[in-house]
Amino acid sequence: MASAPGKRSSTSGKTATSAYLKTAKTQSADSQKEIESSPDYQKLKQDYETASKNAAPRIKEINEKLRDLSAQILAVQSVFTDRRAYVGASTYDIETETSPFREAA
Image (cartoon, rainbow, N blue to C red; front, side, top):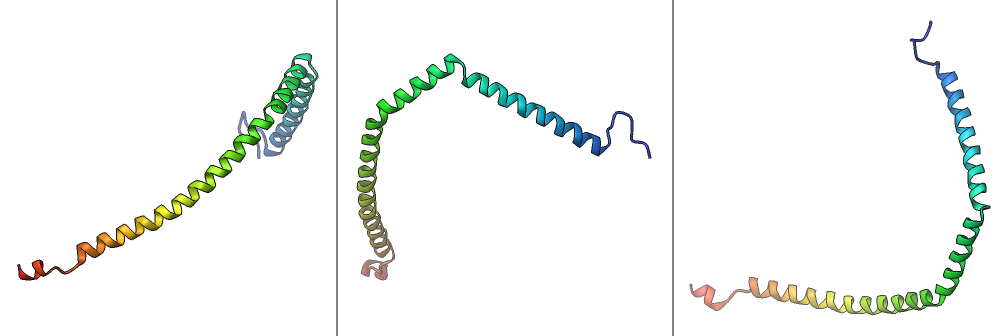
């Protein structure tokens, strides 16, 4: 049975796609190597590493402060949650309490 005009059989389509992907992957890897070996890239990489190294102490300081503040927030949140539950329960008690004034009405 002949395939419709303009259509490839699935086997030749898979082969063509596979060949294209291998070529594209090789070209991509070659381009990446070329870029990474360029003087501009090497300078940018060195500048990045220097900046990261210089920023490391400040980053560590900020992370430590963040950990301390997170612990403080957790402690306050726990107390707040308990108090909010108490207020909610008290409000419910007040709203559902039978009052002598309500019984007389």
